[in-house]
Image 1: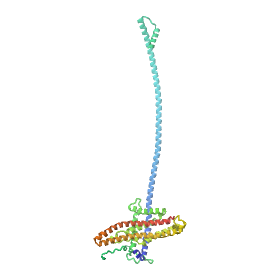
Image 2: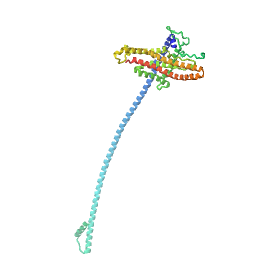
Image 3: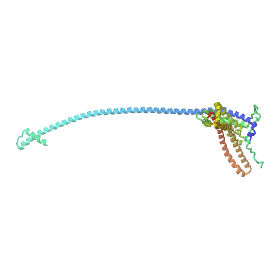
Image 4: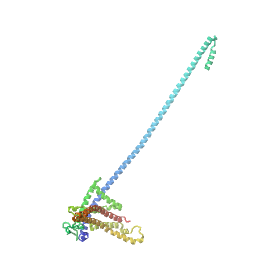
Length: 164
Length: 262
């Protein structure tokens, strides 16, 4: 086993060169390069974290703006609805007034017309009576040779007409 | 028959040889020959450096290579955070170096470079190497423990809620288990790497000897051994990763003891 057989002659060289090369490894690679490599990793992690945070902030801001927009939108909608409702009410009130006025006019016209009709009918009836009275005088004179006075005839006619 | 026998020595692969006439190099009286072991430490360091260069582009949107490097650092970072907590971050450079150094050493040692006449050397199969790494980890645990908690760090040997009469019995057991840590840490890696390489070498000697002994032996012994080798190679790749992970994980667990004394 050379490890033991050569121990006496080689141990110092082994230890010396190991210390030299492991020392170089430790100071150049371990102390010099590893921290830089880890620094790069940390930098990248930091960058990723910062990017993620920025993205989150941007999303939050967007959410906030959307929320504000929504509130405003709701306000606008409510205002618009209020205006529409007011216009509707106004229009309804106006048309109700107009309708009322028109109704009044119509009622008035109707009443006038009815009055005219009633007048006309009364006039017509009076005429018919007069005609009937004359006719009745004439008929009686012709048939019975009796001269009937106008008041009597009128009375009879009225009686007959009331009977229908 | 003896002449035909292949000279496969499963242990030869662990032999350390000085390279380029450096066997005489000395530092303060100690021999510091630049051996094949040191060569593979150099190769491991360079390969790891080359691997890490790909992760240094520092792009915000990483490429594949950068992604790979970052997943390794992230892996160690997560492991330390899971085991130690926020305080574990400052140990990332050390545990990362440890994990990657062992991982690359294990994997490079498995490269089938023998095909090209170069023999990879797995220096993690030497307990001198794994022992030093274990001692470094253990020293960090001791330093952190005594620096953060002072002498109170000795309460590590008394598990929480131990009844008073049990302390004299439990404390020595805890102390022994604590002191065994660097040995188990170093030996585990050394044994796992050596065992795998020895097994591969033994199986390859079966293939060579079996085939040399004739077609029948070649089919009965050589072929199954060869198929087994392929499987063992895959297993060794897994072990290379697992042992590096275990070393780093246990180091982080031990540091946790020192960092967050119960």
